[in-house]
Image (tube, rainbow over all chains, first blue to last red; front, top):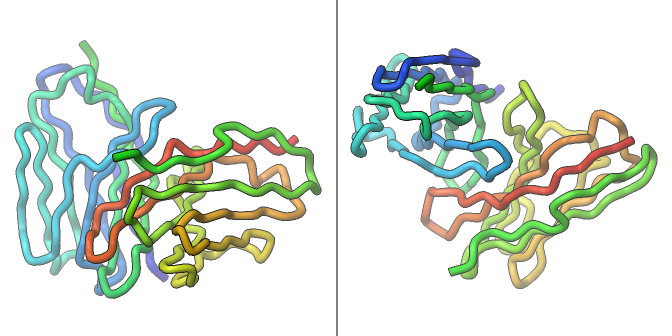
Length: 113
Length: 112
C-alpha cells in the first residue's frame, strides 16, 4: 500500500549547523511532495514543496531535493536557529483527482542554542 | 481571508459515546480532508470530500464517518468511542486545481 517513511524521528543540532531530514515514498504515482512544520500546540504549516518535474527547490535557508528514480526526497535547513525547533512532516500526494496526502511519521528537530 | 476553522477545540467523551467534529474550510475551497494525529503515528488519512462526495477513505473502521455540505463545511462522526480514538483530529482544505492543503487548528479528543 501507500507509505512514506521518514528519518530520523528526532534530530538535535547546534544553532548554526545544518539539518537534513529524509523521506522515502512507495507510490510511483506520487508527484507532489510538501513539507509541513508543526510547532507545539499549533497547526501544521507548509514550509516548502516540490513537484515531480523538479529536482531541487530552495527558499532562503530551506531546500528540498527529489530523486524520483529512488523515490527519495529530503529537506535541508541551513544555518539553523532556535525558532526552527518543531516537528517536521514530509508527505506525498498524487495530483490525479485527489487531495489525499500520505504523511511520514514526523521528525522532532531541536536546535540547541 | 479566514483560515480553516475547526470546532470544538477540545472534547472529553466517555467510551461508548459518539462525537461529531466540524470543519469550515477557507472560503472558496471545495476539498476537505480529515486526518488523525497521534504521537508516533504522524498524520493518518481518514477521508476526503469534494463537492459533497467522498473521494477517498483511509483504513479506519466504519465507526468513523463523515459528510460534506453544499457550503463545503464538513463534519466527521465517530460512534462507539474507544480509548484508542483519543487523538488530535485535523482537517485540511484545498481549492480546486491547487495542491497546497491548509490545516485547521484541530480538535483534541480525549476518550475516558
